[in-house]
Length: 233
Image (cartoon, rainbow, N blue to C red; front, side, top):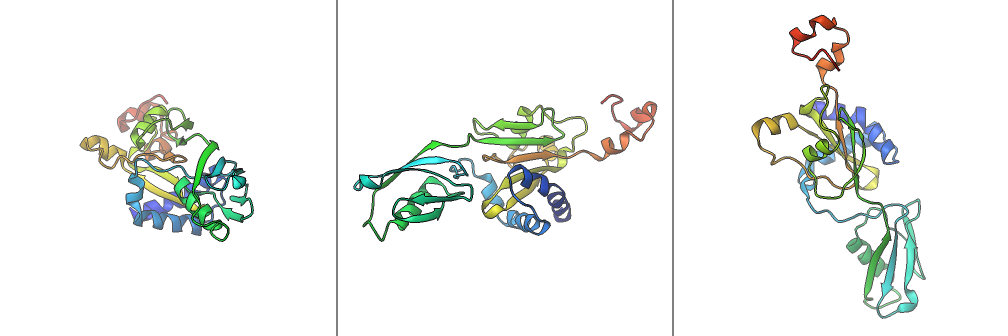
């Protein structure tokens, strides 16, 4: 299974990285796959905090120092510029993490500042469904969805899908991408959805093509029935 996971990550990692505007080398994707295998419990987090992205904007309010109040936009390189405190990286941070980082940036100017951050303009949560699903595309993540529910939203599996090796790509920090293969076929057959992972914003589900559908076009149409495969596609 580890070998299959590595193969899928190396083949599909470039597509995932292109989607998220990242560069994907085999080494970086393979490293992220290894990281994913050791951090699988993180994939089960149901209520993740929003992480800042490029072009997001927010207001910073200093309760005791209103002259430092400011509206900030995350720059294309992921940095933000703070009034009288220089620049810091903001991309990928949650609001509590950003609050702590801004407080540290002003520690040489203010003593224990009281800071409030309010998001003003940000990406709506979404997920992407690709491969052998009825309606591939980008979908708003408006509620708590699992992988199987997301597949249903995207039109369900096609006749050519490989249910046993659905790949979940998850963007991580530092330009990495986590990947995990999910045996949806086994879950549905056993009526046990304990491993039906809950999606996070930016996740991509990829449903690969099954082996039979790959060779079906080379078989005589009149003989497809003997292989247990539908004669229409």
